[in-house]
Amino acid sequence: MSEAQRSEPAPATGAGDTLASSERRQRILSLVRARDFVRIQDLSRQLGVSEVTIRSDVDALARDGGLRRVRGGVMRVLQTVPELRYEARSTDRLAEKKAIAAAAVAMLSDGDSVILDAGTTTMEIAHALADRTDLTDLTVFTVGLNVALALERAIPRIQVIVTGGALRPQQHSLVEPLSTLVLERIRAAFAFLGCNGIDPSLGIMCMSLPDAGLKQAIIAASHRSIIVADASKFSQTSLVRFCPFEEIDMVLTAGTPDPAAVGLVAEAGVEVRVAEAVG
Image (tube, rainbow, N blue to C red):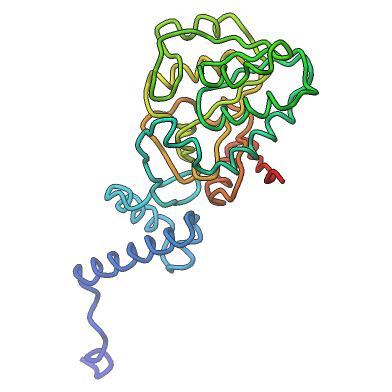
């Protein structure tokens, strides 16, 4: 055996491969957490391994709950938030909600028909509608009792129709049974819907199956369905998907939403509009 052959390093062992794999996966986690979203090809280039290897690493990390595979890349795991009472959320990110409300009302014209979901952001839309004394002959359908009461001062300029159903006190909303009877008989120009999270890999999320059924009925009853969601919703998910992205026309937000999540939603073919702050 030649001297060169004797000094040649031994082939890597299985243990060495495991260590390299562990270090690589930790590096992937660090990159994704730092940037929120990283493309598979970028990880492959930065770490000097094939895209097949990266996908295998990502699948293993996803099984452990460290990150999530989405179309075209990897993103950090979204936060799942518990349901809170309406009052506990009403003042959270209020400036963003007011900006969304102003932008939503600016879309409307005299004679339009609108469906307003229950929620804190749609409540701000109700207040903005009541303040817009130049808008006349509007018809507003709502599943929110407090939303309807907020519009009471705008009658008769705005006709307010409560859809009916069983009262859900925690959110002051009307749910099944009977909550969709009116919705099944109308076709409004606009619907503004709240959500509990925007999951780039799944769609628009809410807390429960009954909520999902009601929101699906609102979408079916409108020509144009718009999700109104402050920036925090782009970093959150929830239990139930109530619609995929192709069933909505726009996400109207405000503040500084996660740019990676915004990009993924836009890639799904949905317009994401960021409302300007109300002066």
